[in-house]
Amino acid sequence: MTLFSAVLLLLLVMDPFGNVPLFLSVLNPVAPERRRQVIVRELLIALAFLLVFLFAGRYLLAAIGISESVLTTAGGIILFLIALRMVFPPAGGAFATDVEEAENEPLLVPLAVPFVAGPSALASVIFIMSSDPSRWPEWLAAVILAWGITGLVLFFSADLARLLRRRGLIAIERLMGMVLTAIATKMLLTGIGEFFAL
Image: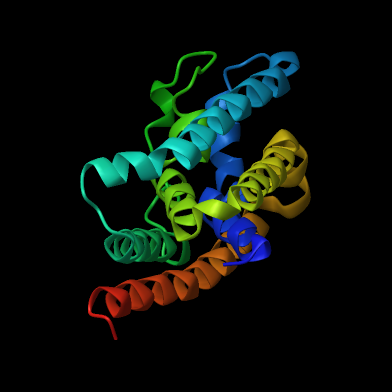
């Protein structure tokens, strides 16, 4: 895995464009002058979760006896299911949730977790680090780059929503889902091949 492919994988999993309407919906009750401050705070919380799982996740897996081939296969299955939801989203969007239950100013849930640092993103950073722990500076850079791009998209979410409109956001999300499907299939086949030593 290269730095570019790691950044691309994380970007596809974080799905910033797919999260734009979700962020706008959750932030709707928040005063307009506070929205960007809330977005920055939630993005920083999400980054903290991603970094903890990047550096501590593989030790947790080692403690419970999960091998790299099993992790790769499981990651492929999870990403494939996510990709399907992106290409064929259920009513309300790919990651539909009861956003109406959010408080006036959300903290941690649902913006930081699971919208940005969701289970798939956390599993992906563990997978990336487990692929070659000695390259941790590259993986750290990949997480920060993917998080930074996601943060820019979400920081300007209101402007993007006006520019791209709903159809544009849906088209981008489905395109990202198609690419993620290919990555998930490769991970799944690689994991199965490693497990059976093919």
